[in-house]
Image (cartoon, rainbow, N blue to C red; front, side, top):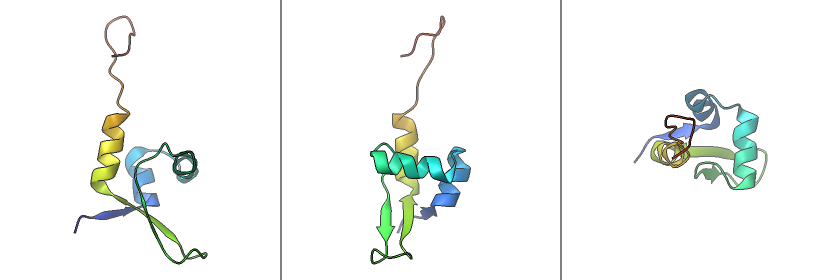
Length: 70
């Protein structure tokens, strides 16, 4: 089984705040995630490391001379 990362670990890895990750999840713009729990206060959001890596790659912007984005 692939390693699962907590929101805190993804926050540290991406340098995004926990609240920013929450906003991205709500907007459907963040990395794929897994929600564990029964819908109560003890729900836990987890991320597969490969999903975070894929999400980062998909949002990569390459800049060329003159500031044009590719």
